[in-house]
Length: 323
Image (tube, helix red, strand yellow):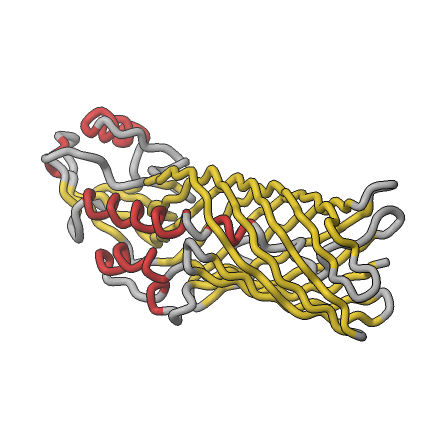
């Protein structure tokens, strides 16, 4: 049954997993969610981190591409990997598991006011960039507005205050060994449920409201920048296990058997699978900075972001045309 998603059944004494207990599976995905949710605000702030604290009022504008990565904490993946005996995600460097990201950015000055507004969009299919036997993907849309407290005239720097909103979702997929579940105690007349060509998947979604302050100063062709921000997010994260083929005692699982298992366990089994989700609303602080190079209307920026609350790091590069 192609792309059939299933999660190992909830609290029931008559069912046991051949390799590990369901409660441990749920705990492992909750551990991932708890660790990752704290890093989502940093990931949501990829893009629109131009080194110019202020781009100028209308008709000033800019269009460019931001590319980089946010590192999710490796500890988030340790618990499930220890259950399955699979390694990989938790073996990345101390920086964490890289989530490659990019965004198309645009900014436009507001007429008569010392303000600019920006929009960003990014999307990556999980199969586009394989990373050491894992696949990552994301979708992101965001907007922000900045008010120039100081416009950087003469020897003075540019200083701006900004507010923005970003929606971000993503997933990580990693292949694992086929899974076998003992279902002899369910009363459906079968012994084993086998999930072949299994994948472990993690996913998350976040709505982020962001506030930031930034200062920048041009020195010849260079532009130095630093800033700090606070993000408040409504986020959720979790995961599950999927299988390309699900069989019962050697034959492909039937709809009748699915219904019997649902009746026996009280768990809904369908193409959407079972998700262990953690929902957390809260705020996090970050600092950021970088250096830019100005070649007439061509701008090149390199920057770093650090999540103070989550202790995670991000790296960005931006190239754009800006007038």
